Image (cartoon, rainbow, N blue to C red; front, side, top):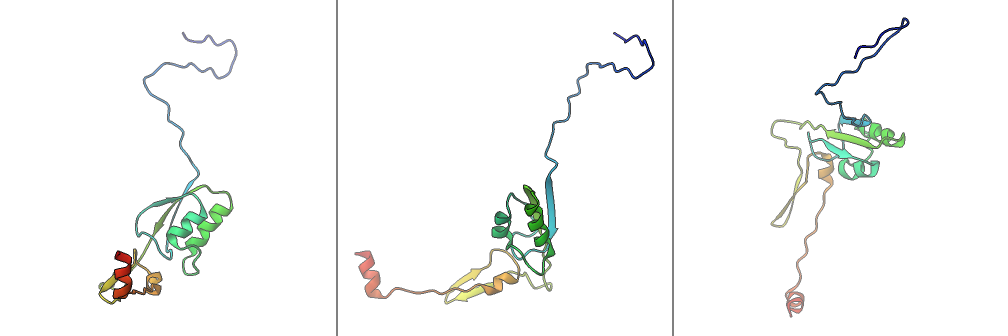
Length: 136
């Protein structure tokens, strides 16, 4: 039923329709794309704390200013961030993934970056007497 205007102003008449309202979504999620020390490459990873970011991406890194932006985000009350690590190999033949050999055992870093060059491994074999004692 239309409203009968009795004085000048704005009148609103609501009509029923089949359109549903837009559901509310979080507007406080921030995305960070940049160079990080380690972590998956070109994959979005959701983090909820700086400690979680540090475990996955290596924490603060002087060569990657984006890591400081993530730290500031959480220090200022941020609660959810989507982090994407960007990586560019040095050449066409460079995968950027470090590999070390310990005898016949070959170990490969989980993801590319200079951090993998610092990996170290020691392989020890038990003596025959120790192995026999462990079996018995």
